[in-house]
Image (tube, rainbow, N blue to C red):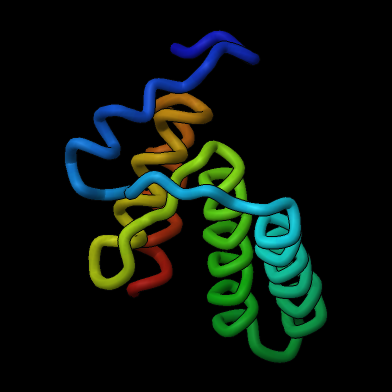
Length: 112
């Protein structure tokens, strides 16, 4: 497990083609975090009326927050079908293996 504050080894993510190097600005990262906060806020608002839609929005909020963290780490996930897998792998690299399991679970539930 990674020690908190230790630099993350991004080379496996880059070698697998899941990410490309990315120079981000604080504004780009902030916009992703704002989108994540909006999705979570909207999910809470919809929870009683449409729990399935609320869950989908909460998942999107989680993915947006992880993308923001990846941007901050200098990485941009590939677009397309592998993007969600890329974000789950990033979660493991940045936050530890348990995070990857949790994101993978959320993605499976979101596809059900």
